[in-house]
Length: 472
Ligand code: URP
Ligand code: ZN
Ligand code: ZN
Image: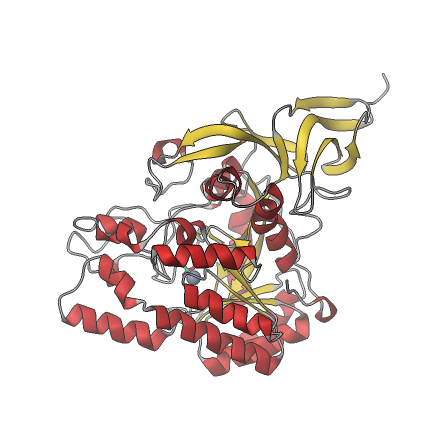
């Protein structure tokens, strides 16, 4: 019997990339896209995409999975549940965090974290290296070694007692990153301002979740973004600012880019769609919406959308940081917890693409191209996964989503697959949904069922060289 030329043929869909939207069939062989066009021939398996969009799988470059948090708490999701949720939401690649806490050996952190991912991951993955203890061993031995072995992205915190690094340490790390062409990402908030405001509020008995937002002043974000940018200029090393939440933060990035600084930025669905009013709920309920930086004001939404329009912000990631709202996690200090004792973070890996498709494309504000760019192509390019990930092109991995642009879904915790037990978007209706999800040519989600085993996701190296410094 003659072998068919392709393993899979996706017929009759509308293909959407960051550049174009067009009618075409897509042929897949050995996990890669090998032909795009019409009348491509026969395949062992055919998928009918009539009436559907065919989009690159989402690339979520900011997801906390099976990671000890900045508060010393293990996240609700392990690699299996976190990446299953990603797959159900149309995301086929994630970058998570191998987190060095103080006193820990970075090489061992990466070895252990790799073992967890190898056993559990359902989608493909890479790591950011959280460096919190830049000892001579870390800086001179482990970091250079890891950066040259495909762990080409560093994440630094300017706040959080357990993880923060000081300015001189940041400069040391930026210089090492520059030598290796690595990415350096920042959680940028001024630690002193947050600590001072926290102390002031608690001493006045203002302990409710809504005061978490007061304890992270807008100025703390702006100051740290501007400081990080100045350090980036001093060392001539590009930086990525994570989760920009304020109009002024976006403006700081825009101003720096206008004078030629190589700074890129992300925001997250919650900073585009939710406000700090969510924290006002009775009792500790608002703790479900506590994250850092905190949710801001409706006026910030418009500023962030405009920054996405102008591409001063290039990426929208989930910052999936899932903690259950019970005594095992957010409420582990009991029913009288102060805002300082409630873990920061919200789930979002599964709903990122549906929320954004709804807010960007179904709303008519942006085209499909811009949605794909912000959620797949730009993140893949910035961190060195592109062109293997984040696009539909000959030779790219066949990470594809058959997306129903008309399907209306009401979001709720019961239908989602992470282990948080709640969603910040309970009851919100979205239009547009990932129907079928393929990873390297294998259907991993179809008709609401998972069809991939834990451990079937693969590590994708972020290989960097000084000549190919990541910047957008
Ligand atoms: O509140 C958040 N975002 N928690 C996760 C850790 C971080 O700051 O990114
Ligand atoms: Zn952060
Ligand atoms: Zn984060």
